[in-house]
Image 1 (tube, rainbow, N blue to C red):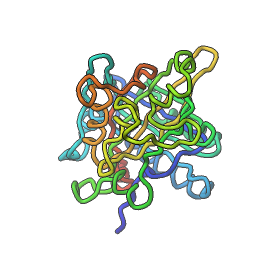
Image 2 (cartoon, rainbow, N blue to C red):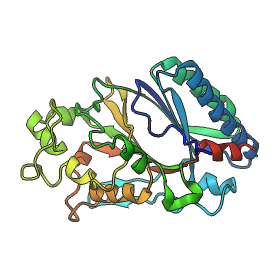
Image 3 (tube, rainbow, N blue to C red):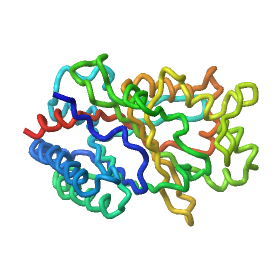
Length: 307
C-alpha cells in the first residue's frame, strides 16, 4: 500500500496561515489531539475535492515536547529532538516552545480562514495559540526585502528526496522534519542600503535573480552560507507577513527536510559562521524571534493517532 505523506512538497500558494499551539497545563489533551488528527485528515480530503486545482491543504506538525507528553509512537524518529539555540558571536538562533504547528495554504484566503477557524474550535479548550501568522505571496515569489526567495529549492524527484524521509528511517518513511523561524526585518535600515550593497548581502542580483560567481560573491553573503551544498538541500516555503506602517514586517521561514541535521548545519553556518565569526550578514537586518522543530507524520500515522 502506498504511503500517504502530508502535502509537504506543494509549492508556495497565494495565501497562508501559520499557527503554533501549546497545550495548557493540568487539562486532558489526548481526546482533543485525536480529534484534531481526524480533523486535519478530513480538511485535506475536503480541499482535494473542492479545490483540486489550487493545491489547498493543511499540514500538521507535532513538537518534541508534545510527542512525549502524548506518549506517541516509539522509538522516536532518528533526528527528532528539542531544538537547541545556536549562539554566534553577534546573533542567536533562538529556541522556542511549540506543541502543534499548522501550515494552511490555498489560493483562496477563505479556505485558509475557515480551516484556521476549524482548528481553533478543536483546540481552544486545551491549548493556547502562541503564533498566528497570515502570509501572502509577494510578486513573483519574492521576500519582503525584494529578492526572490527559495531559488535553491529542489525540484522534480529531488524535491521528495530532500523533503521526505526515505529508507534511512523505515519506521517513519514518508514523514518529514519541519523547522520554522519567525524573522522580523528592519526595513528602514535595509532600504537605506544601495541596491548593489543589498546584492552583496544576498549574493544574487536583485531584479534578475542571478547568483554571483564564487569569485565575486562575498563569503558572508546569505547565499554563500545558507546553501549547504547540492547534496544537502531542504524544501523551503517561506512567506512574508506584517504591518507596513509600524515597520513590523517579517518572513516566516519554514522548511521540510528528510534530515534535520541538514537544517542544523545551515543554521550553524549562518549564525556561527564559516569560518567561525564570518556570519550571514543578512542577520544584521533580519532577526529570528522563534525557532522550533516539529515532526510531520504521514496521513497513515495521523490516522493511527486519531484512534
